[in-house]
Image 1 (cartoon, rainbow, N blue to C red):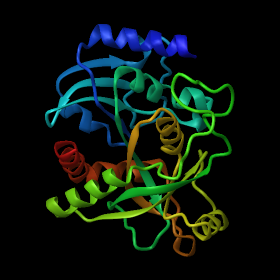
Image 2: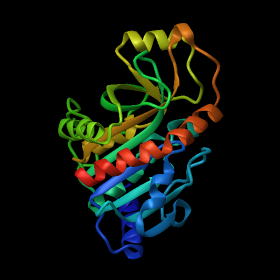
Image 3: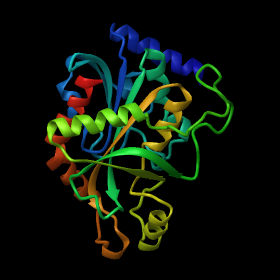
Image 4: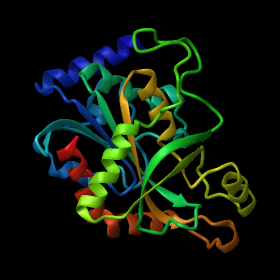
Length: 270
């Protein structure tokens, strides 16, 4: 695994001389933020040694490196999901590569369903904590001592200072931002009423099929994490309506300008 990570890292360094300090993982329908990166180096995943390939609609499948709001960044236009059939080590592989490239802060975004009635479609939620209901963990197996300890602490998985910054930026830009607990599920189906009731009782405010694995590995690697969820639909058990991926993509498209303005505001302030 480490040999593969180093091979991917070396390839990227040969193509892009800068050292990115901030990593961006852009969720379903949110990848257009990477189009605003200045002096970009664009690397399709299938051109990078040992890199997996994303297969989901709304995920372009490429790395974009360059400058955004004066910061050196690396952005994933499209992520990998456990439900695509990848193992957890593959899902989180890009986070290891980001660490090798010099990334210190990871901003991980997603499109999610809102379980807390105080949330609403098109709203933004800063992740203050998560519940892993995916049935697996990317740290299972031999520990990669190069990156972190066998038993990493997850009590502050999402950096408190970055959360506070996210709140402050929302106020400055007059963008309402909630805080909540994100539940990571394996997918790839939208959950039943009974399952939603269970997850709400457990303390979940929103749910989705990503983010948790990347956050675990980022913490293991010593990266500071900020998680931002875009609520695309409401998953409240008592008022649940049928949904499909097109609804998620449509809401992501509608909310994109505000999302991009918000993340750019965070990058400017961080």
